[in-house]
Image (cartoon, rainbow, N blue to C red; front, side):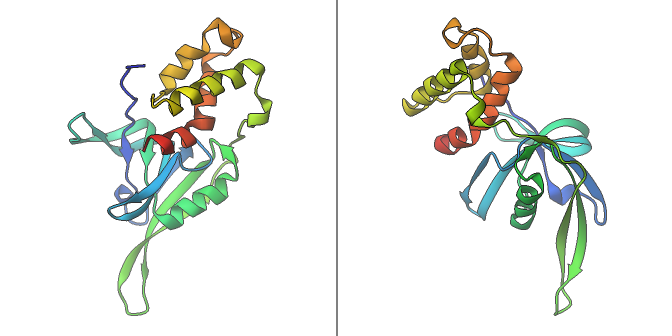
Length: 192
């Protein structure tokens, strides 16, 4: 369990060109974490982008720009965009959305940035916790017990632990990742 956590690059909505769009396939149906920071409320989402500008952070928190990136990213939408993403996802994973950046004018003539969000695909229904096998339920109970003991559990840990015979020996790597995603929001909020 001492493996380093996966660090996905950050996609920033501000980098979308004015009157341009970016397509994002949402990895989940809601933020994987939320909180309050220096600048107010924040929500962390995971998604997939194609040919976008992203930022990698090294262990020293130094950002490196990567142009034309395709793959998994994290992003922090504005509060209105966050609400729209939750509404459009409607409990489904892998919903594809298009976010378009524009400018709007206030009553006093000032301009502000506005993001319109449009659903491009319905995605797939999230797996329900009620459909867990006995082995999967036992795995999650044991992982929750580790969490309560103060041990952070990563996606890689779940995959490794799921291979143990104790859990029936039939939890695939893909299913272990799915189980991690289903419950990662609760675990991530606990760790933060």
